[in-house]
Length: 145
Image 1 (cartoon, helix red, strand yellow):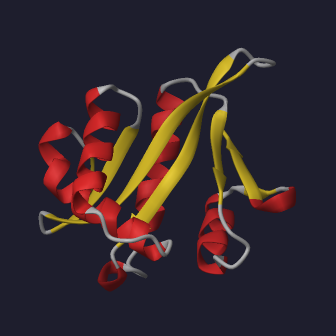
Image 2: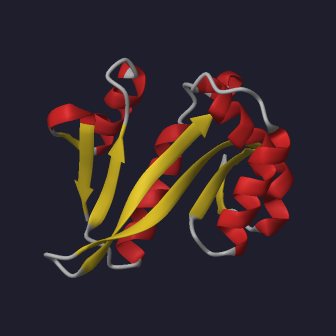
């Protein structure tokens, strides 16, 4: 298992993962749209993406978007997307991806990492709480670094 920061050179693998992620959220498959979206995020430096690799096969990803806290005058990162292929679930890829995102936030001296998930996504909630995210009202989570 290996976690790497994705670049534009990883666009093929990211396109597949992003399309599968959208399917998980009951969206229509749209590989050309997924490719264009991820290409734009990476090309414009609008997000940071880490990929999980298992024997050089992309098995999951996490995507972070920058935000800022006016009160603390610091950057925060929004963990917007997390996905692990079904066949690779339960092997620690999701946890490794999240821990990499937290380490990245710490390295950028961010205030923390913010994420949100649906009430029905209890598996993800258990993982977030295991790592140290604190559940707030309306299914928001925050991990302070």
